[in-house]
Image (cartoon, rainbow, N blue to C red; front, side, top):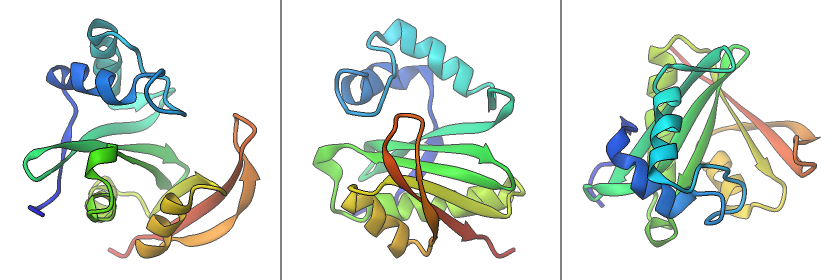
Amino acid sequence: MDKVILRPVGEADAEYICENWAQDKLDGYNFPCSAAEMCKTIAAWNAGAVNGKFFRMYMIEAEKVPAGLLSLYEKGDALSVGVSVIKQMRRRGIAAAAVDAAKELAKNFGFAALAGQNRTDNAASIALCKKSGFCLEGRGVNAKGNEVFNWRLPLRF
């Protein structure tokens, strides 16, 4: 596998995002289904804040092609990281490499830690958190009523 890179999403990614993450494509995502509406969402993401909090969305590229999305959202002194890799690119270490890149971004943005949250039945996401060095902080229930694990990874400067 070639090096995994993160790059900010752009309007040119709208159709690709709709094809892979629109609300009717992947459980848990509520992205618009049209490229025109997705462009509006991308413009909001690229404003740098959502709901008054720091936010960035990146395209994960591996093997010189788009492979997934990575979000960073302010959660206190941490950045909550969300990773989604398209099905045909999974099981190649792409998500772990993307989280490693996110660690450096979080440090550069001045955050003390990464945070993560995943459903308690999401074995792949749990394994990713463990592999990436996150510590389990506890369990909870998310806004959708799902039981979740909460993770934290302190960053060393």
